Length: 138
View 1 (cartoon, helix red, strand yellow):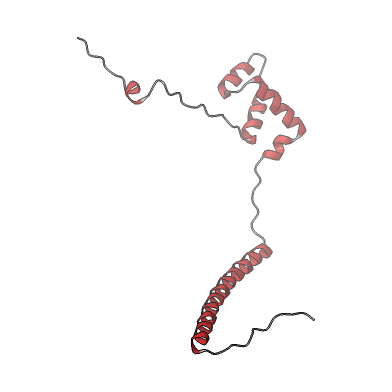
View 2 (cartoon, rainbow, N blue to C red):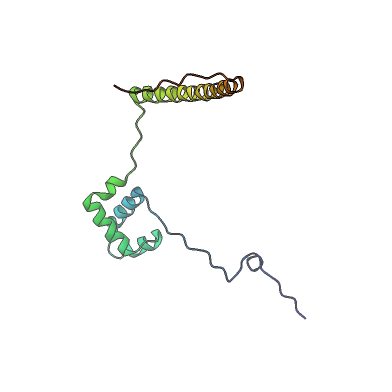
């Protein structure tokens, strides 16, 4: 009996499972580059360009319309500006206030524990505490 040799693809790839095709996304820079190349094509060269780039004529039509409406120029990435001194000051102030808030919350929880212990001690010793003042506005 002749033994079957398995190729590396057969042993590692299940023929029943098909890989999911991923969509190709072109950046605005790529779209503008392809449009410039398409505009420079001589008659008969456009098909070769579309095959090479992996695009359809509908892509070119949509991209040309977007270019005419100015949408492609709006998609180009813009350089981030350095933070202004005012923004840096606000960021530092926010960080300081957050630290202070955290410190005060810890102090408040500690004070609440102390007050609870004092109430329990007063109850055990039979001491009546005066009612806490209310913040009544007149």
